[in-house]
Length: 368
Image (cartoon, rainbow, N blue to C red; front, side, top):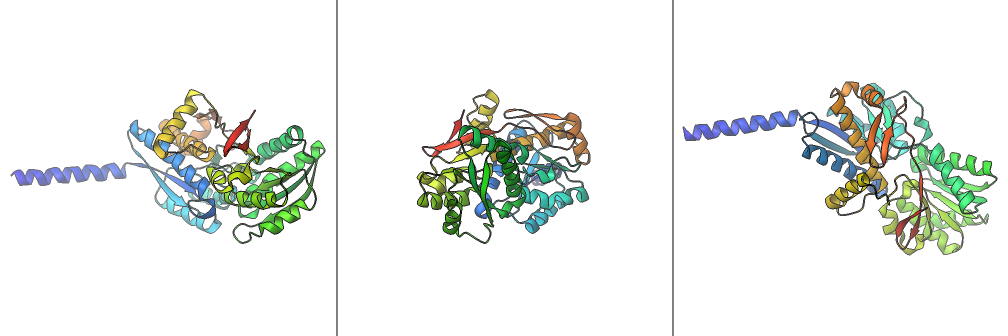
């Protein structure tokens, strides 16, 4: 009898465990988790992971635990669509990500076909602005960021002639960024005296590129690329001209830039999407939890993916039906972020502040 009771107890435990698994709410994550673009994707995955773990520690959503399912888009359109299809097949309530604009543009048509809501993180292309679709994002677009960067360069750094190098591996971001930057700085009276593109998937003749950029004697060279390539390009530029001003973009603003760049990137200017020196209680609570969990400081990718995952879970707390998630997000409208409220307009777009930093003593130093 005792043995039978033991078997029955084991069956009950197994049944309860199976029930618990099937009752979980799945949230997908899509980002570049391998190769040259993994720094941003891994940070985003970690931020979303922290949000899910903290919510589960509080009992989940409506008593149901959350499971984060991550997939690698490899910064490739075909692989990204395949990864999204995989997440949809797993019946995720929504997808956090992707982390780049070109992947977002590639998968956006799939969202309407499958009825899946996606919350983009570093997806600033204007290609997706003002569209009534299933794509939301927690970041502003390049019309805001690149324009503010151009004003900063012109007004605060006395830049008049600019040479630009931009990466076609994330063309929906880089081309959009360059167009908005060029329009703004020329409107102020400056000029883009040379603009060249490359694709970091295939070509990395950075010595030649540096020479071509410097030939026109610009006041500043602006690099619109990921962290790994930005660090390498800066090294080539510094090897040929130690005095020219250099600037990167938000895409490059990760710890990997500091790790790969070393002393050669000292003085590099960058835009920031999150104030990493924010001492508010909300941000510091997030930062401390992230450092305790991952043993490193959070980047903007981690911060914004954390916000995106929390927004999905907050919306599901209002209405647990994922088929109505788009309507729930729009009707609730405003959600708490790590630095103030995040408010969606009718198209799922938001407005956020831009910050500026300079690499000093091996770290990103906020410019006031």
